[in-house]
Image 1 (tube, one colour):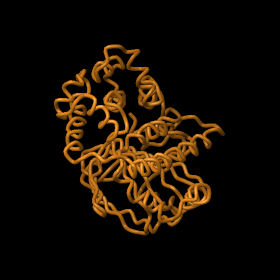
Image 2: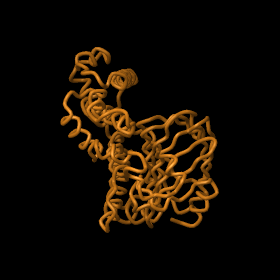
Image 3: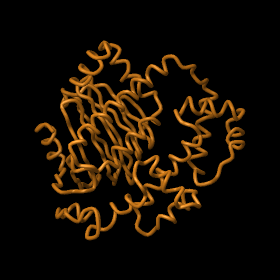
Length: 336
C-alpha cells in the first residue's frame, strides 16, 4: 500500500489492527469508530489492483467526498454492495444492496450520502493504469476510448455476476504463497465480467420498459417472500407473462435463473443471521426457508464458498474464537 493512502486512512482516524483475524491476514485490517460510523476496513494491494472490503455501520446520515485526483495510479473503481443505503450525488446513482457501482477516474470529485442507522458492506476492486495498459491495451488491443466506454457504461449492468466473486473474496482466509495468485485471478475475473457485460449488452435485444418494470416487481416480490416456496405460476401472473417468457426475460435482466436469485437472497440473509449468537444454524436454516439442515449447508457452501459453521465460528466472542490473538482494545470492544 502506498504511503499516501496510508496517510489518508490515518487522517480519517482508521487504526491498523496488526493481528486481526476478521479478514485474510494477507492484507491489512483497520478499525474506525467515529460519530458518524464504526466498523472495519480491509485492503490488499499490488502493482495492478487494490481489493477493499468495508464492513461498517453508519450511525447517522453522512456526506463524504472522494477526490479521485488523489489516486493518480488508478484508472477505474468498482464495487459490489452487499449492504448499502444511500446515493452517489455526482453523478447521481442510488446506492442499494446487491448492486454495483463502477466509475472511471477522470480526476473528478465524487460526493456520496450514506443513510444513518444502516449497515454498509462492500467488496471493491480498483484497477490501476498499469493493469489496464498491460492487460487490455497490450494483450487485447483495446484502445483508450473503448476502455472508457466500458467503464462509463457499466453502471447500467446488473451486478449478479460480481456477487459470486465478492463472496469468494469476503470469505477467503488462506494465507500462503498461493494467495497472491488467488487475488490476481479474482481481479482478472472481476474485470472480465465488466468487459463481457458491456459487449453482451451491445448485442442483446433490450427489454422494453413494460417488461423491465414487470421483472422488477417479480424480484421485489421474491425479496419480500424469499423464505416461502413461491410457485412460478404466481410469479408469471405478477409479471403478466407466460412462464417461458418470464424465465428467459428474468435471466436476461438478472444474469441468473429465478431459482438462483431466490437462493442467493436466502443465503445473503442467512449470512447476516449467522452473525447473531442467539440463533442456532438449524434455526437460521428454517428462518430462510430450508427444512433440511444439510441442504441449507450445501447451498450455503455453493453460493458463499464457506460452510455456515465457519461463519458462526468467526463471530464467536473474542475470548473464544476468531479474535483470540488480537489485543487491540477497539477490536475487542467491537467483537464482544
